[in-house]
Length: 395
Image (tube, rainbow, N blue to C red; front, side):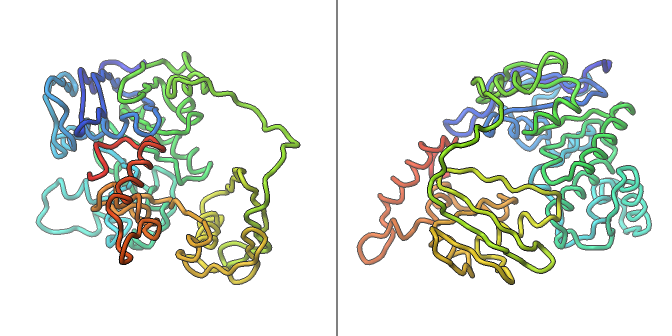
């Protein structure tokens, strides 16, 4: 068991308007441990991380102690200088800089050098990639990489800095099983060298594999912190949701609804080849494969943003040609992208606009203008139906 506490939080709360994001959370993160943090979406994980990294100020009364020294709050710069580094789910990379520059930038900028030593930047990046066992072109601009490779760069950047606590927010979401294996090997190496890891993931199997202790949040409250041998996947699921979830194979012979989508021999050169499947009403069809296997490209083809070279698509038994996302929407197809913050939302617009943006035709009133009452009613109903946690539709 690791010795001592690196980060201690007491009475940590945070409100956004009328929404309670965190309430009286206590948390101890030990030196040299890999500590898992789990909870459903909206449970408060991201807010907790923002408080630890100084991005968000907690409510009065919170106590934050870093290696024995107490703070009422942190700032991002202070947290960084205390050795707290985070790899966010949105990555926060510089798309116009190279892989080497992104990996080395935090460590290099902190030195305050007036001139750039490109050889030193490259050396920092090469050393980090070598430790992780990752092969990557250091000279390519990060904006030209896939999301999975961008995530690897973000992880390398955190590790390249002199960190005492590395916070990883869903670090494996775009990694292959072999890459996850290598990452876990390296995290265990860091742990053995006394570096502390806060590992946040929805993949409970990975949490149970890598973490020594696990903290569970639900609805902004801490349910508890448990030793690895005290919990399994079923118990963690119950602690996160408050519900008993049954696991087992689906029964065969279930009646399927009518066929709403059929794909025959769909091909896009260099991306996917001869893909065929059908989807029935009320059915959930999973498509999986390693990074670069063509999963995202196939989804984009069905949404009209990556037209296939050959093959056939049928909607409700009728052959269609989907050449734009608007055509896909008109056919009743929706798409939730991999990178939600960049491709899925308009971040500088309020909740109400983000909800109604694809449904404007349904909200038209006289003179083909959007009816404000319909718009607000539509958005408020969506917030209620889907349980969206927000202080209001205008934020």
